[in-house]
Image (cartoon, rainbow, N blue to C red; front, side):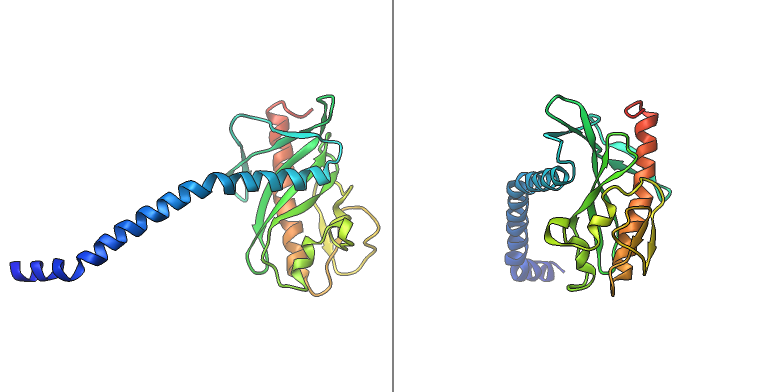
Length: 209
């Protein structure tokens, strides 16, 4: 038995040492890159939110800890940020919400007005939708997007998706991207699941009248 154990260590010591070394290298790499990745995420949020709430000069979290929002029967922490203009007044609210797309998760930066009554729009923080079809949810109004502009001024509440209609009319009815109904619905479903619970939580916390 002792010979077998000795043989095992003779044959596997290099593998065990290599595993420890690689593990340490991965941990060191993660520690080195994590702050940079987090800062890049913050910078991208600020860039997207700032493009939606153009009057906001800076964004501040409404609480020291993320607000606990019940979404789909689960309690999810959400870092709701207040967009402040040059005089320190609330220009609007912004937050990240997440849902299931056609190919992967979609993560959106959503902005609404100061009264939390109308959307200022959304930007895509992450998506992996089908190129040429579902990924059209990424195209901004400035880049000639068909889908995103429909949400600018849309009411905060229950949005519905339609395959036909006038995309120039801003209301609760959103016209789907041709050939990308699933991705179009994913955005609408995600917004419907997150916006109202966040609004209600802000009211409950006395942060919104």
